[in-house]
Amino acid sequence: MSLETTIPERTDHQFLSTIPGVRRFETYPLDNFHADMMETTHAVYPHNDVYGQYCTVEEYIDCPPEVVFEYMKETISLEEWTFSVRDFKPCHLPEVHEGVDKVGSGHTKIYCKTISNKDAMTVDYHCAWDQGEDLWMIYLNRIIPAELVLKKPGSVVLWTNCRHPYYLNNPYPEKAPANRLWVGDLWDWFYAGHAAEMQNLKAILEFRYKNKLPMGPNILGVRQ
Amino acid sequence: MSLETTIPERTDHQFLSTIPGVRRFETYPLDNFHADMMETTHAVYPHNDVYGQYCTVEEYIDCPPEVVFEYMKETISLEEWTFSVRDFKPCHLPEVHEGVDKVGSGHTKIYCKTISNKDAMTVDYHCAWDQGEDLWMIYLNRIIPAELVLKKPGSVVLWTNCRHPYYLNNPYPEKAPANRLWVGDLWDWFYAGHAAEMQNLKAILEFRYKNKLPMGPNILGVRQ
Figure 1 (cartoon, rainbow over the protein chains, first blue to last red):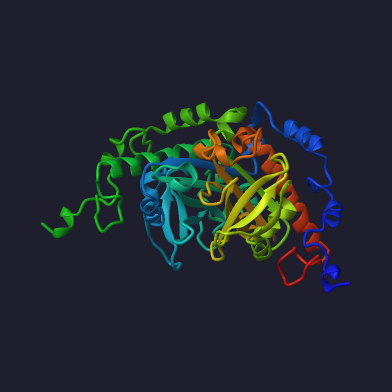
Figure 2: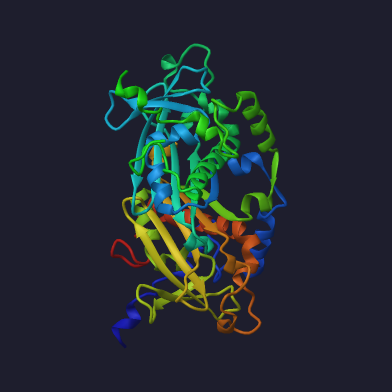
């Protein structure tokens, strides 16, 4: 008898099969799994099933990933590719920009702190309307070299928002201008709005890159 | 006349409006944008429109993000939460694990190199069937602290695959077992399959975390 016989298998199929909801090859018949797949796959999916809790848009951009990252990590670039976020300036909060979201009746302040990671090429915009102390609207972005995932030059941009509970109820109503709509009331339009803004991002970056123009308002040392 | 007057505005609305496809508040009427949003937003979306080119699944997991990250970054954990990837071992390629995908007629080799970033909490599985020199099936994952985006403890996991052209045509057919289906023929089932595997991941991590069990086959120094 060797010591080895006392070492359990590293993957304990029996244990895993006792966890409710776990479906694995060893303990869940392939035919059942196939049936489940057919049950889950539909010709069409309701809006709320796809975009109700999370809103992800993915896009290919014909521009090198390093350039896309450098552009996106500058908060000020949002003034170009968003539909209505403008006029960023420093404010009383460190690393936070104060701007205006023009869709919010024209005088909605938006605060944004951009946190990026060059190695992973993530760029997150931590934002909020009306106040900058509690940044809860988080725009999660990641840039992937398209060479890796689509076998062609350029970038894939992944952009996800999660439905934070503040979308349902404004946590600081006293800081909002009177009779102003709440950003959360727009959640059902986020897919459409973000898809449009992603098209802006793609169009702007591809146009400048193709035409060898300076790449943005605040990068490569050159201003438009 | 001061020097300042020669500095153009940092955001050149006129220039941006000349780029085809760009829609911005200053040069594209809000009413048109609203109409576009209504045009883009549907009651239902065809499978191919949502999952045809990219396949993203998002899920909340009631387990701390650091623990989810530690679990996911170990290639061996895939043996637990995937439906059919098993038996990883080192191979002739550095940092690449060789395993078996049980859905591929039982003798399909799968190769996997896991690249993770602790700061950004990204975990990418760079995989391929049949050979490990050209890893093109890339499973892009990112773990987000749910406190940030959902105002509750736990994690949000984002998982995206992009439709690499090799899904359409096996680039190394000579390395495949005879009469074996090609992984790309399963693309239409990726949403359903990945949603099921994400449920496995959620169930396994939540069960262990809730019951204070060792967290996985190869983490926290304890084996099941």
